Length: 280
Image 1 (cartoon, rainbow, N blue to C red):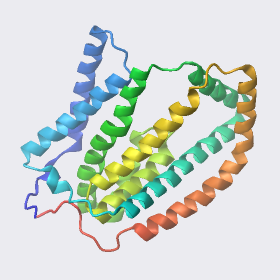
Image 2: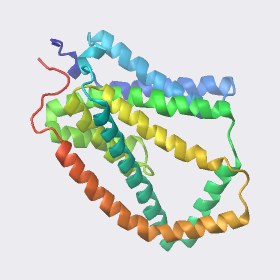
Image 3: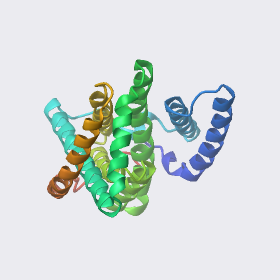
């Protein structure tokens, strides 16, 4: 049993100041050694967040075991969790297609520009080393650090102060904003699901696993289809027509998926539960 009450002493505004300093120093270092500000810099930023969390945990005598318990999920239950992640990812792609087509109605050149970018990505194949670094970043580092921060620290604190439902909504909105406008819906749904998993299982390993699997799906979709050589003009035309034709179908699919996800969230939401972190 955890008799420590130090978690509430962690102040996120201090993290923001720390990150501002950390990123500023990183900009200078990466400029001096002439390293592009891409995946290595993202790893550098996540390292800064992890270091800050480590310092705070040591300062307030918080152990990693205070934030989690031994995973109690069986393999079939974990498979169901991954199935929900797949559904959420489908909602993300459907929402992006719908958004693109809506903007395309306002600005017809928009869809063509998006298609150009996608086809250009398929032509500019990255090296295996760069892809490996990106894999480690999105599938291993990001899920661990983000879940430790958003679920382990923020969710516990905000649920304690504001109530469970308000805490889940606030941390999910923060998580979605952190991931930017293009991935807002996907990040929002995913964060709600990860938060429910953490509250229900009281094991941060479960949302970490779900988060890692979600990012793995994004990684595979981003890189696997784009290793087919240089696209042609015909490929561009076909892709543009396909994107337009999928707009309406994506809208219908998005509504169905959202209703399905809401039902899942409602059924999984813990009716009676204590916070994973024990406040005394």
